[in-house]
Length: 200
Length: 200
Image (cartoon, rainbow over all chains, first blue to last red; front, side, top):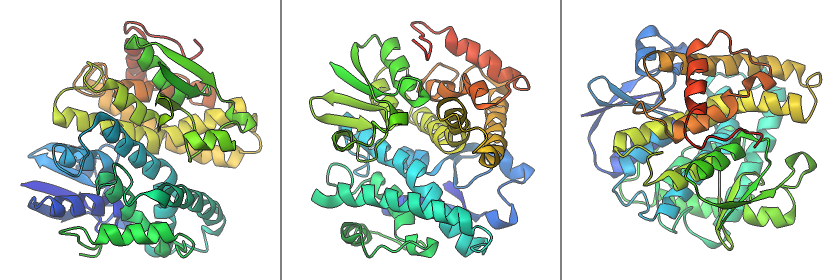
């Protein structure tokens, strides 16, 4: 059985948990408290030199890290990854955008505020994160102007990757009220079969 | 014919140029000077809402952005992408690592110093980038301890993605002399058939 090493409030870990659940694949959950440094212990570093969660243990001693690589691995050959070569590349395009433009701003703001409780200490850095996070949201809003989902107009791992931190962006201080298309898309994602909440 | 919109000194653009050359695929190059804002013009934003290079025009009006998505698109079905599902996911794992842990530190330092010429202005931010960039290099050095290439012990787009900014890390103020495995790997990459330099 797959084993998922995760910090459960993390959107990156939620991505893997959501897809595994939607694929109806059973898996074991192992909680790693990153705030207490549990992803940097010598034992954990044997699973992922990079000291981060999620890590998927595929079979005894075989580990895959990076949330979007895990999504791609699990989704290959399923309806969660489009079958055309160009559409698969577009899924990767949006997952790269998520890791480069979205997550470092929106997820990091949420982590600093909600989990480290250091909103005051990071006040100056948060201003820049806010600006860049809103830029990412604007790119998403514009893309959603004439479609329901990010790629091939069907629910895919591109949507899962972007949903993970967008739907909790308010916990990072982002106001989504100026992003009506994103709000509709969030509802579409939530309506998918076997959806689970990040708190589940 | 493919058309590559690029800022030629950019490692992200070099990734696409290197792979296209190694695949012996002819392509047209269109220079976009990002320092002068040419990736943020209304015309360019029609190609990529996110205002970044590289962008690959696959056919008239059909655009793919994000360097690693472009690599994956071009490499599918070629020896540059391993054929097993797990190895493909490992390629994506290293490409995610590159975009999240490596590029924002090593490439951004190089950009600030070499292209914006703002080393003094960004002095404080560069200290943090240096620390995180060296952390990424340590992860690479450790992974290379018992292998020649990043995935499946064969040259793949994972190596191209990581080579792009590692081989010019010194231009960002990084000293590679404490990373002997990385140095050997850089030579292996350089020795591949049809290799071109970033300045070519």
